[in-house]
Image (tube, rainbow, N blue to C red; front, side, top):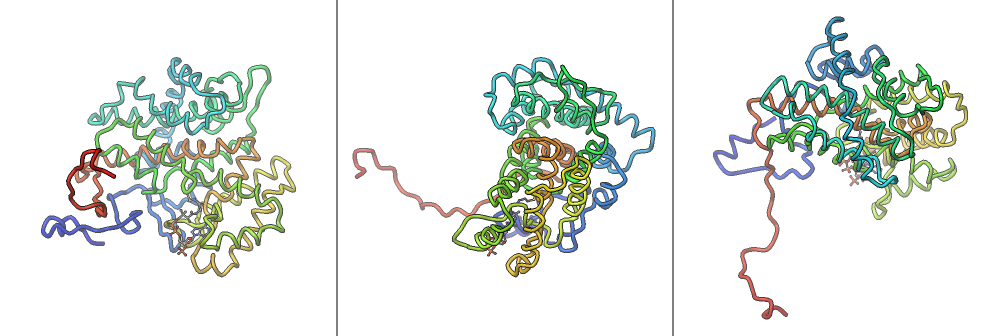
Length: 403
Ligand code: ACO
């Protein structure tokens, strides 16, 4: 690792690195990834252990504070988050301004950004207490906003948070409960949801996290920065991939057609890619994908879904791709999004909500990274350089002289 800043100061030399494939933009103590070995650690703890033994709010505490909480700290943190789950009543008016068929990610970008207009007492980025309050508010309120976006899209009334429920349970309640019927959250599904949140909680300097840091580097308030992260996550090459996976599996339609799609994915004249395969950093199995695969089986078994045609296609596609020379040579393995869509569909979420759930879970990663950046004395405003390839200097010609 070379610190290029000294070279730049002395010689004016800078690096050209489109896509930042080999440039570290910051130091971080939050998440470690070894893409070749398929290792993911949060604050040193392996993701498999956290997914198996911890719960999402505990992981939130860990990411934000650096250490696992004591029992007393855990109870206090859960109480704090629970206390912040309500959103300002006026926020409901924002939803009514959107078309019913608006993509819920569009609603998320708008409403999460609008939080800065409501919670002025946590927008001073120079006050550590306000930074923490903003972090807690975001972790607590994003699920409420996500559930409201869903409810709005299906024309049902908003459901208020229930603070006697756990984090994932409460989210499922706000999403699927209807006023006229009793609704009881299935504990197996709530546990699976909680695990999905853990698996998406942070992933170091990916596109959306880098966007949050870059937006935050100018001193923008945390709610605005998270809205920027949500916008970045929306793309199909990033958080939009699980939605794209399901669309692809539906388009494939039958196991017999898999070879045709695999062939297309390898054709350089065809823009089609196998969605849910490949990763910028993992050149081995994504450790989260393994847990997700297991969770997928558990959820389908719990819901009594024996022969899910899309799951059958997914399993066969994975088998074929993992044996295919092209995918093996390029180290393209299934990523975390490959199985998450199938689980979310089985639970009852429409595909348009998949990326919203990713954003909900990633909020803690974004805000932890934002906080770390603000507290890092080395950080400056993010200002990438460019290689100018446009026209050289030329003189303006009046309109009547241009042919
Ligand atoms: N299907 C077919 N070929 C692929 C795929 C794929 N899914 N992914 C990469 N390749 C090929 C590329 O065509 C390229 O081939 P080349 O060397 O002959 O030009 C090579 O593999 C390397 O691919 P890059 O695009 O250079 O790799 P990069 O690191 O930039 O992209 C990315 C990673 C965006 C994830 C890519 O693999 C992809 O588009 N995958 C599908 C979308 C997806 O699943 N995204 C989710 C990412 S995980 C997440 O956000 C949580």
